[in-house]
Image (cartoon, rainbow, N blue to C red; front, side, top):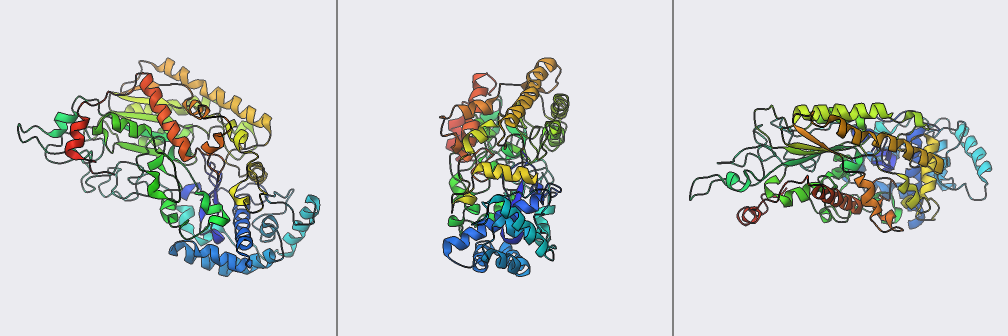
Length: 565
């Protein structure tokens, strides 16, 4: 799903992505341009100034002190950038804020929003003014402050806006696995056990007689007969890895709520900011597809259970340890499946033999989600089928025989508005004055919404989006039926709308707990665990899961945690 990256750090030191799907700064990629009334820059400014204003209110300080307080929460690198930005542009913001101007008015005056045909407003009008009076007032401010027009978010922290890659940043031997955690490292793909040897990597189909060449923590030989432990414990057990090609829901996009909750902002709240930025505000190590760590390791940024397809696959057979790849990318859609399949580290024609893989293709939103106010901008069924087929052909040409591909359809996103529309968004906690409906309408007014179709107060638009998504989903069982027996290395599976089924299994009335509070859009940590377990259970029930390894207890007794992660 596409991520709307909204800079929620003081003067853009923090590029936090709010509402999650179409890139404003496609995580570390190109900024989204266009939009109405200032677009992405307006949204970022409004959220930032609103957050600082609430901080001033909570601590009973001036806006200048509130800006300094917010900058002081960040790690040193971002604090320095924040301080520079505030020194450059802070006085103009502070003057307007201390006069009681709303965040919407301040950002229009500052030029980050533009008085055009409409004023997009997130917060209520200035006290004592009607909405119409406030619109006229904002227009005057815009004209009076036309000298304040030079600031650009990316000018403060350009590396945030420019860096984009889907392969590990640190990979000495070029095997697409890394010993580093972030920047598409071992949080995303199994940890490399020898980053100086391209023949040693997770998923290699080797016997590891003298070393752990496939990185699963099993190596050496039985001294009684000289047979490798890998051969004794893993050969013929159906060992295989898992990889997920998908969008931001696959990558588990999340903005920690404390980042945008004025009463909870602190140095501790932002302690993990750099790490989270290096992971594009994604949490693949806790995701439904490749989750393998405990959320408590990342407190206070995230909390909840971890249960994933990979964690279940590993429990089924400990020989699968570390054999996971998450190629979820914020903003991806069906047309990205083939390119992403080329980034898989599972080359059956490579020098080192590889194990089969269970590949999950899960583009669940962006084919119907973007910022444009039109059903015509959504992927057509023909184009959707073309993208899925291209992904399958590339996968079949890449992975080894015995691999499986599970096709996951688009989710019914109407649950978002149904569950969230009248709840208070964290950015409005102080005065309880910003609901998710306000947020959705604000982003749509600016034409930077991650999903006009789902994040919309108009029910006919939401229903129309589901009708379009259903037409795309109908192509998947057709693909399975039409291509059966045509594939050389893969078996293609479709098990229904497992995301919808998992969410609907949760008690009605409490499903808001399954949605991320900051963007009001992505699955929460709890939802990721439920989805991961549900998809695994469905795979088992349908008879597509590999068998349990009878040697699991022996592996655990001899190799412990197998080197961990």
